[in-house]
Length: 443
Image 1 (cartoon, rainbow, N blue to C red):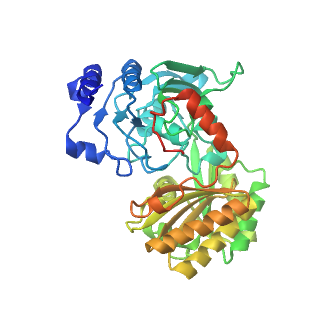
Image 2: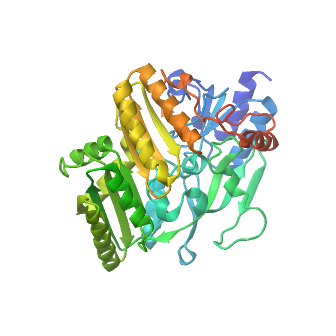
Image 3: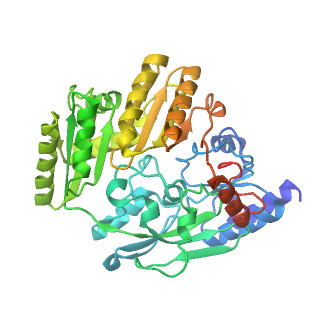
C-alpha cells in the first residue's frame, strides 16, 4: 500500500489538525536519530485502536510517546514510521477516594494527576525524574521509572492494579481490576510495566493511592569515611523506623547538591539523606532517631523541611541531567546492598584512572545506584565497560539509561540478559508478531 494512502487513512482517524508531517516537527521527534514519517495525536482509546489496525495491515512501525522524557531509554529503534502521542489522553476517569483508587488515561502528566488527587488529600507515591518536564503516567509505567520513594512504596509495578492496553493488531486488552485486593487469574498488567511500549500501547491505568502525609523531614549527614556511612545504612535498615527514602551519595554529588541549595560546603564527603513522612510527632521522633544513629557513626548533618526539603529531593532525582557535558552517560546499576560501597570505590578509581567526572546516588536500602559520568569519549566508554564487568560479576546488572548521541552506538545498552532473553522474545512474538511496536528498542 502506498505511503500516501496509509497516511491519508491515519489522518482521517485523528483529523488533519492532529496529524503532523512538517519536516522540522518530525525531526524534533526523532528517536536516536530515526525520524518518523508522521506524528499522530489520538484523543481516545478507540482512535488508538484504529491507528494500530491500520499500521498492522501496512506493516508500519509505531513508536508510542507521551512527553518524550523517556525517549533516551533503550536501543536505537529499527523503524519509526509513526510516532503515536498519548498527550491528548489526559483525563482522570475515576477517583474513588474512599477506596484509595484512581483510574486515569495515560497521557496525563504526573503533575496533573497529583494535582487532581490532592483535592482529596491523596497522592500516587512515585517520584521519577523529569516530573517538571512533563513525564506522563504512561511513560512512567512503560519505563518502570522511579525515584527515592520506591523504598517505602515500591515502583509503579507495585501500585498498578488495572490497565487497558491497545495491542499491535488494534485489539483492546483489559487486565486487573478497580479494587486493591484482586486475586483472580494472572496479574497481566504487570507484564507491560517496563516493556517500553514494545508489547502494546498503554491507554488507561488504575492505581492504589495513599493519603498525603501530614509532615515530612529529612536528615542529611556527611561522614569521614565510606565505611561509617555504610554502617549507618545497615543500622537504619535493621531498625524499626519507617523510612520513606534513603539515599547514599558519593562526595561529588553530595557536594554539588548542597552547594547549589546553599546548605553549606561541608558535604563533599560520602553522605546520607534519610526522609521520614508521617504525622508530625512521628516525623520528629524518627528524625531524632536517625540523627542519633548517624552521630554514633561520626555523622555530622542538619535537618531540612518544607521548601528546602522539596528542593533537595528534586536535585537528587534530577542530578544526572544537570551536566551539559558531552560525551556523557546516565547509568542504573543494581547490586547487593553490601556491594554499594564497592561501586562507589570503583567510581573513585575510574575518576583517577580516566579523569572522568562521576556522581552517584544509591537507593541505599535496595542496591540501585544511579550514576552520571562525563569525560572524553574513550574514557566514558571504558568506565561503562568496567562498571558493567563489576556489576555482572557481582550478580547484578547495569543499564545505560541515557547516553549522548556520539557515544551511545559504542555502548551495549542492556548488557547480558541471560536466559531471560529467549522468554522475552517469545512474549514479544506472541503480543506483536509483526514486530511493529517500538522495534529493536529492547533487542
